[in-house]
Length: 354
Image (cartoon, rainbow, N blue to C red; front, top):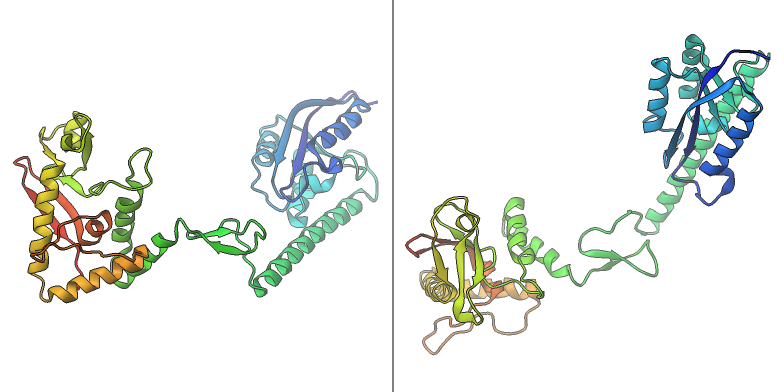
């Protein structure tokens, strides 16, 4: 019996395609088979154990596989044991380069227990068996890939959805994961995106408007505050945040977020009632200055109705023909930004409906 001690690394792998409950391919079973082999070969001294759990054998970019090679090149390992050749690699070219060229040149012993392969044993048919096994593993991998592609192609031709995740605006059907159904919560947002795109609004501006419309929501409520995300400080161009001094709407105000966070700017704030009055006056003035007020109102009304599936009146006028009520959707549709100066003046940027 040889007195040479081999600094041995155990390498195990489980691919994503394998069922982790299948004992013959489990990491536990691989480890058990290898350690039983090592007990019968005292010259093998286990120095390290590498496990790539969830990596294909055709992929060389496996973290523990790369660490194994690094340890070999550093001289820390001179023997590698695997349960079978397919655990090391299913790529014929890759395994050939390592097992027939690199490992022999570095004096590294390679053992595949179930394949009865040991590069230290000078069997005449050893290289032939190893090459044949490598080819079989490579063919198996290519065969599986071909079958998967054909299966996916067949699903596509039948109109079935094969993506891992449903695109925004859809959900996977609970009864059939290859079928998409409309997401009722997101469908209006999808309509909004298409209508904005048809109006010539850029992707960046659409993203900004969606952010303002859909994500600025008060706690314990599904709806955004009417001015959420629209009111900015004219001096630092940062959002003004909604605060409540005491219970009741009369004490709601907006304050500069920069000042509030003690990062500079001015300590100015403005009551929400003042904002509502000024914005309402500015919107009425904006409508009066339109080239064709009736046409403008109809265009805005049609878009809001389409985006929100609204069935009621969009513009609520008083007896003098002036808007008397503001809604969140109307504000977002008409206004891009509301800037508040430290003198409590409002500068309003309106959206274009050309």
